[in-house]
Length: 597
Image (cartoon, rainbow, N blue to C red):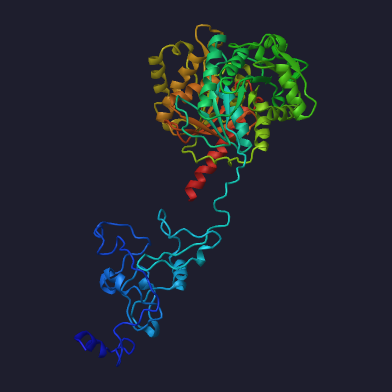
């Protein structure tokens, strides 16, 4: 007996101790062919190179496991040969201990693999598995891996693996091309109420990606432009919406047909037919909730002719007649009273390819009927209307879709001061301003109204504003910035120039005083103020009342501030006072909540 056998004959452990006539190695009961050396074996030429382990376990210390290069010599030992140590192993060897508390290492069997799978959890991603599973055999019945390879837990394949996912319809992306800022917000707020993620895009940057169920509004400023310029501006806005991913288009026009409406419709058709050949426009400016109706081809405001309303006396874009055949020449006016499929066919046949059709509407029910027909007509139909038809389309498109996002909450605004900017020269806007001045406490109100001679002199206007804002702490909670009265009869200054002058005063107010909310009355003034603050978008969160949306500025020097936009000719005489009262309550509640937290 050599020295090794002598040492093992005196081994302290009864199982490992050699006995008389004990052979050095048990007989090999199963013939096994020699195995090739793997990369992690010492005899492999790439043994020293770094490699990734197949389990999320650190490799065991080499002293605990016999040298792996002897796997070919001692690989025939079986699990039931308890009297001998293993000469090879894997990373799972430390997971199983011997019987009777013995500290020896054993090669894990098939049941140990399942236990290790429950212990270790999912395998590391990106690693290849064992041999390909035979078809019809679940993973849990796979035979153990060949000796010398690292053993990994096996996980059953889900029963639906490999099948194609079920494609469900998603909500479209709606692009809104508006003729001014207030009209854009009036329309996009209707989509916000129906669950759409609504934003008014400002500046020259378009979003990189837009999720389905979004409504994007873009202002073209085409209302006061001449026909050629308005057509080009509207076509450019529609092209930008197509680039942003819009697959539905809504053309926002004035509810009283002020401005260059025929050119706007033509521009929208020019840009949209490049993506959707054969498209046509459906015009319905009715807004029954605000008293605007279209009956028998006549546009009415609160039951009277539009030329007798303040829209007929608008200093910039007056409306001379209520006859729609003269407001939109070459069109046919129809009424819808059938099923959505029949009405959609009637719209297409009346308009033709690249044509325009006008639809009567005297109630919200008529608008919903028209919206249902437009949904059936599909992407080739371009609805053109005011915020009334926008509300019906938002609900109809949402009902036809399955994936809409919840409206995003408005963040808390800093400061309690409210700045009201009235750039509109409309009689309704002036009456609402006078009502606000009469019902607010004089100690809570400050009127900033520059004289008309300062509007075309930026330096003198800036000096005047600096003098008015010399002590910002003395400003009350409501500051109203008005255009001068003398401008109403002036023909030398345009509405855009007046709005830019007032925007410079607003910019100085924001820089000097703490402001929590802005109320912008008039489309030109709203655009000028948002451009002066370098705002990137206006996220619409709701509406204070019909026709008065509220949102939050994104980007620029006014980021996070609440902004309310209102058209100059919209709303009752108390609309401005109600807006200021609601904003005061909101800002006070926000400040008290922050103080308590």
